[in-house]
Image 1 (cartoon, rainbow, N blue to C red):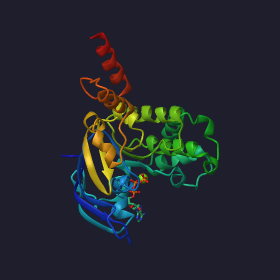
Image 2 (image 1 turned 90 degrees about the vertical axis):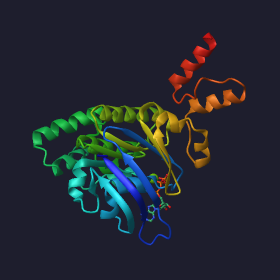
Image 3 (image 1 turned 135 degrees about the horizontal axis):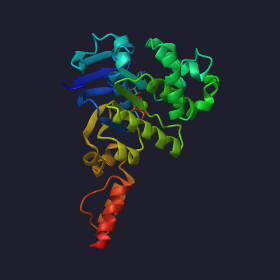
Image 4 (image 1 turned 180 degrees about the horizontal axis):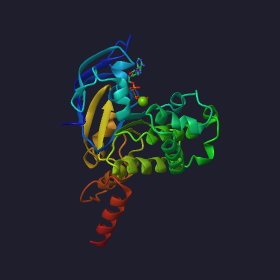
Length: 282
Ligand SMILES: Nc1ncnc2c1ncn2[C@@H]1O[C@H](COP(=O)(O)OP(=O)(O)OP(=O)(O)O)[C@@H](O)[C@H]1O
Ligand SMILES: [Mg+2]
């Protein structure tokens, strides 16, 4: 059985003239890391809202087709049940903070409390996660007075602490610098090692090339392409579809135009260096 299966899914937000998702067909398997890329307003966040059950349970509008999570129709699934399986980190960190808690510690603990985790375990978990995400020094701060990047980390911590099976993460690094971004990718990698399934919306294709298993390209509410990282991210036609390809692949295409052909199109920096060294050696 597929972990998630979408069959002919078309979704229109209330009062919208046009569907935000159009005839989406896609299957997601347990334990894989999916990178979702594509143009602005292409439907990436809506896709996340759908996977997370916010559509149709929170956003009404019109949903056609089938959304199955572990074979079960998402329409008949209990939202509370769903939220113990699936964590969602929103695109805008300012909407994620509950605003009802006085400290970052309490904010991170909120989800665990809702899950009924015993107090002692809870304290241990919050501290562990805070260390991992390098926000220990913020634990006593007011969550409403954090910078965008700090909020993003706190939001990430709250979800990671809950130990869900599936993580739906919408642009978690948009407010982070390159170091912060790399750290988030390392944490996501660690979650994957623990067997979690990850659906990550992210524009940083160089990092996706390194870490993700599969790429889903969205545009105009449709899935334009889905496949293994190498296959999708080395496809130059993606750029006409509003998606970027990695620096390594771009370089390879430039070299190709100059008559320097590599055995295949690299997608990561390491691959690119390796191919160029081999070529020099030959
Ligand atoms: N709550 C909403 N109500 C009505 N229309 C919406 C709503 N949210 C998004 N849309 C519309 O649905 C379409 C897809 O938007 P969505 O936010 O899913 O795209 P996205 O790929 O996440 O874009 P971005 O890269 O800007 O985050 C857009 O046309 C958008 O205007
Ligand atoms: Mg979005």
